[in-house]
Structures are given as C-alpha cells and as structure tokens.
Length: 177
Image 1 (cartoon, rainbow, N blue to C red):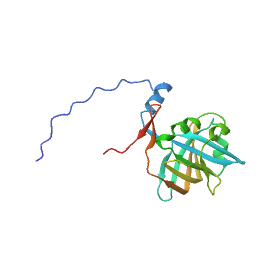
Image 2: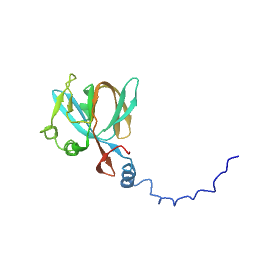
Image 3: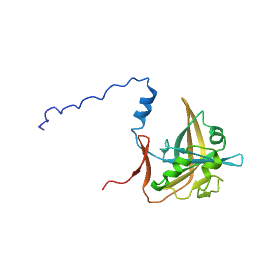
Image 4: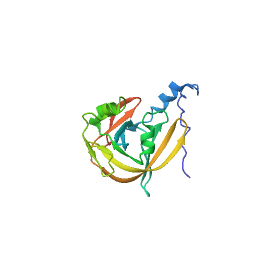
C-alpha cells in the first residue's frame, strides 16, 4: 500500500475581481503570454497589414491556422474579402515592426520594411522567425471579432528567438535548458 502524504497547504486565494470590469478582464487576459505576428493580405491592388497576437494552430491535417480581427477594424473588409492572408511570426529583433504595424495608415505600416512578394501576391516579412501563406478557409462570427481560419498553402521557418508579448510588454521566448 502506498503512503499518501499529509494534506498539501492551500495558497491564499487571489482577490475576487468584479466580472464586469473590462480593464481587469484585459489585465487577466494579458497574463497569457503569446507570440507576435504581422498578418498581411493583398486586396484591390493594395497591401494591408496588421500586428496580431491571436495567431494559433488549428489542425495538422489539413494544415489550418487561425487569428482574430475586430469587426470595427479598418482592414476588416480587406482581410475577409481578399481570399487569403500571410502570417509572419516575428523574431525578437522585430519589436519595432510589431509597433509599426499596430497603428497608422497602410503606407506608413509598410514603409521601409523588407518584404518578399509571394506567388499569392501577399507579402511576408523577410526576417521573420516563421511564415505561413494561407487561403481563406472559414470565417467564424465571435462577439466583437471574426475568427479567421486559413488553410496553409506554403510556409517556412528559421531558428531564432521569438518575440513574445506578456502583460502588455514585449519580451523574448527562449528554450529552457
């Protein structure tokens, strides 16, 4: 018979925050560390891009990924009507690009950025850690956002440190030894 240890002490519970406080809700969400991406598309002969940290894998077979976009975003029509998008996963030295693609008009977002135009006509950032070129697979209505699901048509990666985002600050993801 195995010996069961004595009761493990329970830590003090965190203070309860009212469930209707949007600022506290955002703070709670910021406790989940994410990677940082720039999502691009080509629509009506223009390039569109935005910083995004909601990127995630959905399926290996078929190869599906997702990200979400606010319904109020000025680029919503471009991303939902263009037929596809590219995701560039940012490496640690690309923090300034994450900021650049977060605000301003499209010309300012792409100004001075090293990019490659892919066969899909969409752009990917050249120094990215990884990239995925996707056809639009499905849009899912979800509250004040749309979940955009893409089927990966092409991808690539390189070995480098990833740019991270945690508690509204940039950082670096590195493997533990």
